[in-house]
Amino acid sequence: MLTEIHKTNRMGAALEFLSRYHTDGEDFLNRIVTDDETWVAHANAETKQQSMAWGHTDSPTRLRKALQTLSARKLMVTVFWDAQGILLIEVMTRGTTINSVVYCRKLKKLKRAIQNKRRGLLSSGVVLLHDNARPHTPVRTGQVLRKFKWDVFQHSPYNPDMAPSDFHLFTAMKRWLGGQHFADDEELKNAVTHWLKSQTAAFYAEGVGKLVKRYDKCLNNGGDYVEK
Image (cartoon, one colour):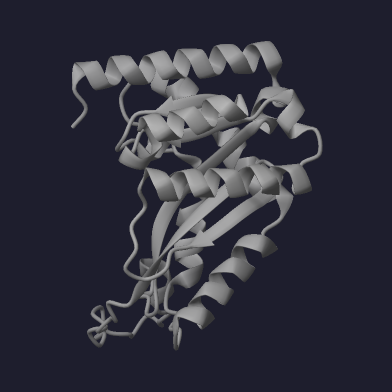
């Protein structure tokens, strides 16, 4: 549950975001680079929509469905992206964790990826949208970002409704993963990487663009959660 302090902070972030958008328009959205992490599993349950079955008028109202036993094997995937598409995909080695050292290493790789894939973005100014999870806030991370001269637009933790990776990218990816099984880490990694890279630029632009409507709703509903 959001406290009044949480709502006030969310409204402040919404006001800042919308002010910058109304000043710079699409240029502001095109400078946004966002990232997040998610788990991807070797064995994935079908989504509710996938498990639905067509039936005729005489079909029984209850359908029996076998209980799915899923593997616990999974990988952590970090994705950096913007309105044009994927910038960097990092799959964590099994057993490792993301700390400030690891995250700073990812940021340096991200900078090289931006240099190679987004000509002019570094000079126009990157707006890095990420939450204040523990690896993102230490002194070491701040030093790297200040050295890069990137503009950091942070959103509060546990607010997936304002994180494009959560409400857009990973939601679509998990729907695609539903019902699929992968033999090993390499097959899973290749499949997820291919899916992420095969999505159109319009798909990624849509995800970033949704932030405008969501922040507007957040501001108008007193900082409460935004569902769509």
